[in-house]
Length: 192
Image (cartoon, rainbow, N blue to C red):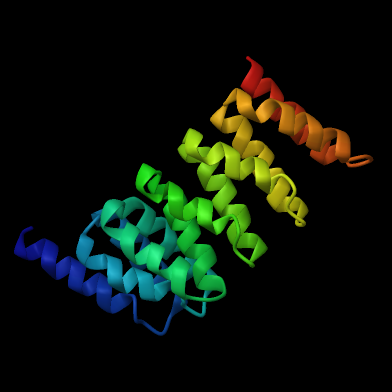
């Protein structure tokens, strides 16, 4: 890393503490583009920013940085509460590493529905067959959005183990056209 890159990094890290949320958001976005591991801790702190745009930009940037961000993000899932966990799940989804599959499977049992939903979506995007059984269990989630995310994830993974449980969930969803539509789409993806 050149001295100029270090200077730029330091400027961006300072801007991440600026009073103006727009400046903080832009700094968070730029830190993801430079993909420097030195930005991980400040971006982790920014996941708890007052402004949702700053939190989102920080999560996306952590996703761009990738591997160096995995461990701190997993620690958040295990130890923190509220919003910060949702954004940590979002960042893990973007990393798409097999290393995060177990943590995301654990997150399917989180008390926060949005963490469960993000985890299901992430598992579908990563596409690991390790997630099939836990996602089948998640079809029964009490939150509609989580169940739909699980159906879509099973479709994205494309493992035939998901066929019968999706059909069963579709039959149980009497009167829920949207859920049935999601089931049909997932089944088409698996059976092609």
